[in-house]
Amino acid sequence: MIIQGTNAPITLTFPVDVSGAREIEISLSEENGKELKHWNKESLTVEGNTVYCNLTQEETILFPACRCRIEIKWLDEYGTSNFADVIYDRISYRADKTVMGESSGGNRQG
Image (cartoon, rainbow, N blue to C red; front, side, top):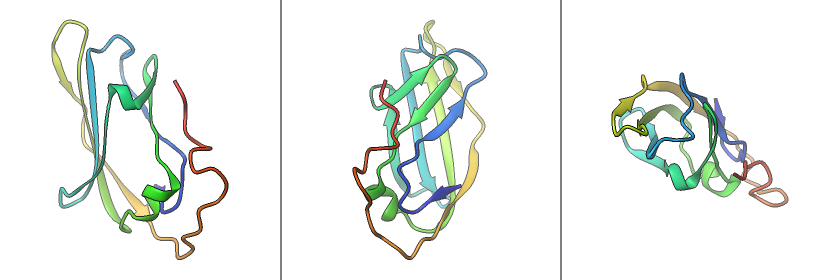
C-alpha cells in the first residue's frame, strides 16, 4: 500500500541480481493506465536483487486514492528484455496534506 504523503520508497525484490542490468524501467500507474510516476535505472537505487523506487511527500500527496499497478521491465547484461508480472496495489487516502521535515528523508540513496 502507498499512502498519500509518504516518502517511503517502493521496495521491489527481483528473482535475480539486477545490479548489472543495462536498463530498468518501472512505472506506477492508476489501474486505468494513467501514469503517476516513472523511474529508470538512473533514478532508482539498485542493491543486488532489491530495487528502491524513491518517492517524495510532495508527489505522493498528489496521487489519487485508487487501485494502482506497477509495471517492471529490464534489459539484462546480455541484452535480453525481461518483464515482471504486473503488481496490483492501492494508494490510500489521507486528508492531512502537510509535508513534514525534509521531503526526501525516507528515500534510499545509492
